[in-house]
Figure 1: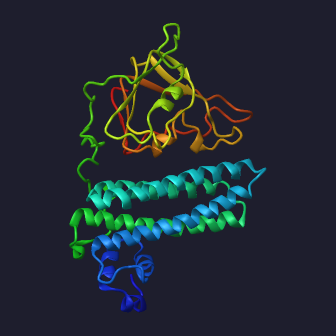
Figure 2: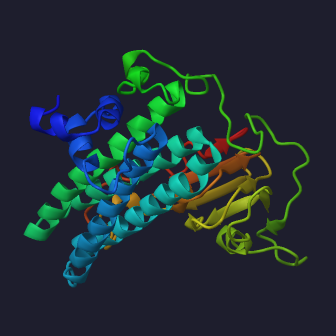
Figure 3: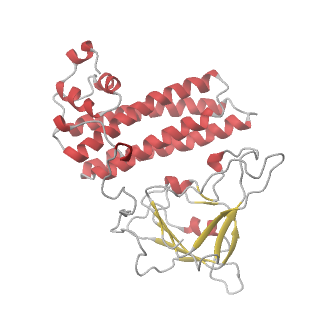
Length: 345
């Protein structure tokens, strides 16, 4: 609930909008500044809340950079800080997509997705530092990240209410999820989803390979590794699926799809025929759980969606490293998110 002193000096529009958030005191105090317009509209309040998140994100990035700079010789903390830098950079990218692209065009659901991703990346950063929290700077940064996440959560909550009720802020309330027994269209099991470009699951028609990957290089015209093919995908291309046909074979490699590669499709030759396998495991120098995926990592950060079609198998053929056991911690491939789709896998 609000403190009376805050409520007495805060515009009623902000007080009403902040009722949609989980951290209402933080919401009110962060928006009680001269930069918020007089008699703000709901959209202006949301943009102001996102601006608060973005401003504090830049501070968090600076703090994490300081951790990285002071961690030479400490592999564990260096790895955590590098992962954190990456996550916060992608958080900032998603926030920018919300304010510069989605909301100005009235694409509120897109803004929800982007802001939700931004919040998740901030959590991932904090989670990475949790395993390297051996300095006061790291502890201070984790505490600051908690504050940052409350700002981002508040902005996201208001976007959710704006999506549901528009300018009727009297109806705004903290969002409910499946944990509360509430399922939105497209979120319930079996309901399908929309990954953009009119795609609602199933196999997109008329898929034509842009490039091919093969084990037999004798005939030419194909790439030897999946990563080489991924690297050929154009940067920031919208409206076209970039199809990579991966012919039958076992590809022992770690595949990463960078942020700027959009709408990538992996097309295999059959179940058990096209196989991508890797063996990263926690315990190897410089490897955390975050780094162990055979195929992924940047998939989580890619825009639009990644479609995996036609019987591709992803394996993690991890073996013991040093004294670590076979069962030690490793990660599912980083392609389980709202911008990935699987068909016949």
